Image (cartoon, rainbow, N blue to C red; front, side):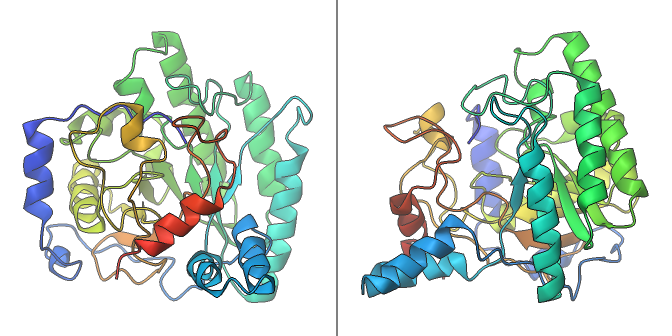
Length: 345
């Protein structure tokens, strides 16, 4: 959905090789002090109104059993509700507030916990542009956060602003003032989330290991952005790093951060890992072929300080208008079926 500028180096290759053959159970042998998982034992919310669910129903109605079964590998699993901010027709993002109200009511009826991705920061996706938008000012953004929290009536998990920190480090599309303002805004957001009784846990986006084979560069920006106010970090959002590698990398970064933090990992599309290193540029992250569904969502990961595997990227939605695909966020049944067909066993 957003640009994944990746510098492929020998270091990345060695990092990936080091993870081959490791199981999640083996990855629990870390120096981290196990953090009490607030999500353990919780049921994650399944949104029956997703396009994937309606598509699965249509396949059944058309007696297309094969594609119905593939689509049900997605529709039967918990996903994430994206809160994407303003548009030309909805300048105050009223749609997001209505979405939170509906999701809260449905999650209550399911006895489940919804996961939200907040994705409307000023200058959003400034470095790639496929999802370029967001609020114009910090004040407008924080007013939106307040409205979201007021509408949240069921305890929920929040993943905060995919790529927002990573793009302040790797890319040159933000000025130093914009970067400082972003850190300040993220810190204010994390503070607000920490004070809400309806926020079960909040995780600040930290990118992934292909962007930062050595996560050291993330520590300072995460601290300036208020990671101390949240439960921890969100990792691998919308990307393809295999779960075993993502767990190790997350634990390494968490050790650097300190404070007994934890992570959630997006496993929605990492079942076959990332594309071959020979594939570079937008083709590496924007609707690449041959990827697969990863580990199913769970709050019992068996890995120290990894609170959950979640499907943050909505499976089947386009990353952007690349390679002939439609605009970011558009559901493409063929993409969803391809991911389900190649699902991790």
